[in-house]
Amino acid sequence: MNIRGSAYMAKQASNSGATLGFEARLWAAADKLRGNMEPSDYKHVALGLIFLKYISDAFEAKRAALLKEELADPEDPEEYLAENVFWVPKEARWSHLRARARQPTIGKDIDDAMLAIEARNVSLKGVLPKEYARPALNKVMLGELIDLVSGIGMAEKADRSRDILGRVYEYFLGSFAGAEGKRGGEFYTPRSVVRLLVEMLEPYKGRVYDPCCGSGGMFVQSEKFVEEHGGRIGDIAIYGQESNYTTWRLARMNLAVRGIDADIRWNNEGSFHKDELPDLRADFILANPPFNVSDWGGDRLRQDARWTFGVPPAGNANYAWLQHIHHHLAPNGSAGVVLANGSMSSLQSGEGDIRRALVEADAVDCMIALPGQLFHSTQIPVCLWFLARNKNPGGDCRDRRGEVLFIDARKLGHMVGRTRKEFSDEDIARIAGAYHAWCGGPAMPSYEDAPGFCKSATLEEIREHDHVLTPGRYVGTAMTEDDGVPFEERFAELKEMLEEQFAEADDLTTTIRARLAGVTV
Image 1 (tube, rainbow, N blue to C red):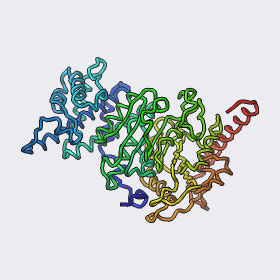
Image 2: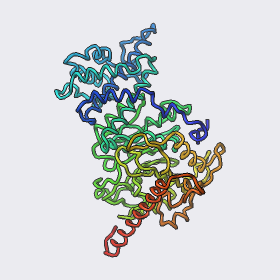
Image 3: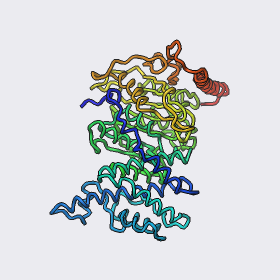
Image 4: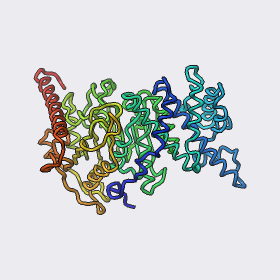
């Protein structure tokens, strides 16, 4: 089966992007129960209960099937573990908790259930929330929340019910990220951005890695891609790291709800200082590292073997992330990385030299400028870097050595609220389709530059721009006589382009002044 460019050639599955209809209403009802509780605290209360119902439903479905088999023992935990179903003790099953939802001891009952599940399932040890009995948690609210969660998927068959619970869990993760604002960006990458990364890289089979995996959204979307294109869960092997313990727990629950087996490591030192998977060489890497981190401890890693293209500045981790990711790519591996726009043009502290080295080594495959307002955590526009270890891997791909594709997607996306945008299925298909056409292959339409949108540039052209990788420099302006765009929109677009050029000029001025003063930058 040839799946390259499938997102472009096939109609985008509306089911993958659409909600189930009741998700927003369910969120509104759950959020109303929150009262004055902070979203960052309530998140674990609500998501923990959704997770508990999911594994209980999965257990009950398997138990019902075993009861119908003559030689099966429905009380044998091994029968469940063999099919990746968690064993749920009687006191932790949802039916038991729902019957006690209005009791004043319900908080302790839930904590006891979580402890019992962890005791019988080693892979969940230390993962589940166990603070439901704390005095500050309103027990009436807790009972009402149990009633609300009890209704999820009740009228559906077992498999469909569990899928709905997984969808609800994912929807709630995004909604909590929005409610938390900037802090929400620490654990959640917007789904449409993740879908774009996945459709670009097409992680159909092989090892998938995220060195800063947050709540695991990159993995969930990768598994969805595999299933939607005829593969199976398990066709990809998943690896990840996360330095925030609370976020790591969210990721473990998120993946468990989806039935995804993964090697997700937690360590509070982070991927730079404690690389838990030093020998891993991944076929696909998807990452949304924290932007412009200034206190990443770079001074202690000046001689690190990962800095193939130059030592990253101690005051900004952007180019440390890029090189860490490139280091972990397999010989034919590729990566998609979300970074701040400044990474495309910065000349400070040697970043321009590292970028030049990346380009000249043919490690940069594609650059995409994204519109602003896509993220919960920041209103500023960001970009996507796509790296490749080998731009002539054979197979369906043409030899694209010496070329870089630039895509300006700043005009795409639609508002989904007062402050945030999303990509539509059509937006994702257009961007990914341009990339796959550029990569080539017998099943793909021929690639053509589209003024104002995409441009295939040679290394010589990039040198002429001093190795600045801002797509707007290369794609030009769409050639239309009168496209009906209001003056205000045209003015805003020109203003954004001007601000981008001013930022580049500021970087250059800072570098020149520092060098004249004899300071190494």
